Image (cartoon, rainbow, N blue to C red; front, side):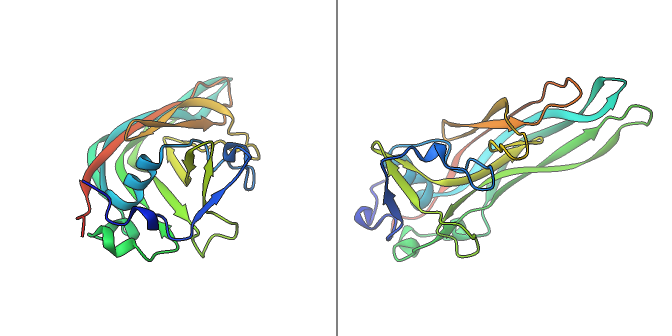
Length: 211
């Protein structure tokens, strides 16, 4: 499917830079970890309206005399449609937008294992959000164009792992959050000699209409 208004993507939101956006930090958080082709960036913003995905992982929930006990999270295959801009049904609904927000959320189950208590069974959430010049965010969040690739501000997380965060010591690589084949690295804060692992894979499963 051709893009309806490719020259207007995104409307006044792209900032060309000579510095790698992956090196930027906001309160210690890496929000521009991966650059993608213009076609992929346009597909996420203009076309992708819902994603289907699955995954899971584990992270240290308790520490028993120096031995980690893990919380386990499982996300079965399910679909998510954002309640924000991504819920718009037509590509033309976005042609005049100067800001954009998604909030794709997936639901699953969790098991919190403890040292001296029975496990606790509950629910869990994971997902990702793209932000483009969102007026609620206190820092600038354009799309950066660097070395012929687009870098979109993204927050993501699953099973206790999320964006690299130097301030929170989330620097231990524990897996990938994969969106349409693009891998975004997940980081955790390992304590009690734990080995956190996490992964989630999702693909576009519903597209907007072209007009």
